[in-house]
Amino acid sequence: MSIPAWVNAVEPMIRRTAAVPIVVVSSNPLLRQELSRRLGSSRWIVSEAESGAHALLQLEVDKAEVLLLDPILPDLDPTEFHSLLALRFPDLQVVTVNPHTGQPMLRSSTTSAKALEAAEELEHSGVLHGFQAKVGRSEVPESGCELPGMIGDSEAMQRVYALTRLVARRNTTVVVLGESGTGKDLVAQAIHLLSPRRSSPFVVINCAAIPEALLEAELFGYVKGAFTGAVQSRMGRIHAAQGGTLFLDEIGEMPLALQAKLLRFLEQGEVQRLGSNDNFRVDVRVIAASNVDLQKRVTQGGFREDLYYRLAVFSIRLPLLNERMSDLSLLAGSFAQRFCPGVALSQAALSILRQHSWPGNVRELRNVMERASIVVEDGREIGPEHIIL
Image 1 (cartoon, rainbow, N blue to C red):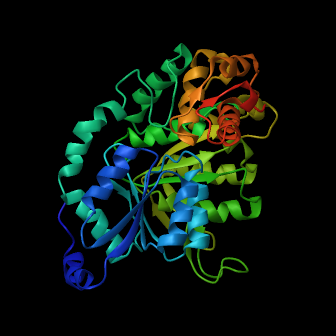
Image 2 (spheres, rainbow, N blue to C red):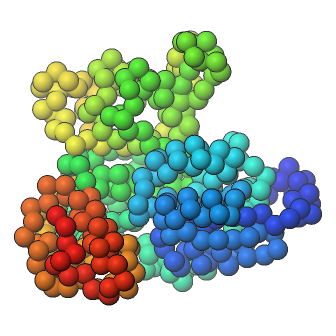
């Protein structure tokens, strides 16, 4: 990839200014170290953060202008993190990087020259290919092994990994099914990261979190004057995912009226913004997720049958945590290390965890281990007294 001419034009001006503060956010210390090393020149003042919360604190201190983001955060949903950044640091430029190679992935049309320079420097350094060779083989799982961001080697999870890898290379529409807390969003991210679309946007929209009156505008966008308050035109999330992947979380909560419009988009590959008669062709892969039985919802009249069959071309069902208890110690240990590096998990504590039914699945286990990491304070071992269920 050649550096755009306009970037070359502004580069001399950038180099004459003071060093730019930049924060590297990743739970992977090897990735943080390598990115920091590559940007450790007079042009950048680099600081690191291992989580979303840590990054927010670091931004308050450093007043950084650019943030390099590994999207697989240990503590915050990427969409939630982006919303917090937009609210608290509206001028911050965010460049999302591939969590396994360090290569820049997502950049908006409004990305500043400084952020582009950081991205271009990483892309052209050549060392990131060496980074992938050095740690990529252990970080990027092979067929049948764990997916990016997922943990467990049970038979049930091996099947999930295999199905995910098979469908990732295609453009097939996928629906991920499973109860809350089983990791549906991680499967969707893995499909994107393992697909040919990995360098294009991964756009998430939670159909249950956005009011019905706003969801259509969020998905399809609108033109100025389309409704009261539409003071300027806005691109929808579908259009924003051009060339990449759109993840529709909790699709079962989408209103019936909007389902018809979504079906039209899936069948024709076109988007029509609110208040406009113009159609825009888009190239977007759709992954949907639901914690409810969509077939049952169809029978009850709450979900369109034609949309269900259009989405469920390929289904991946995630097991409950109590259906993969052989993964419990691995999951608990990983969460313990994430929240309290170097801490050990005693057999007595693990025994208590094994006796629990885990109605909240992996998310509940993650919360229990985070509480334990707080209660243990400066101790080096999590015991039964630290487990709060």
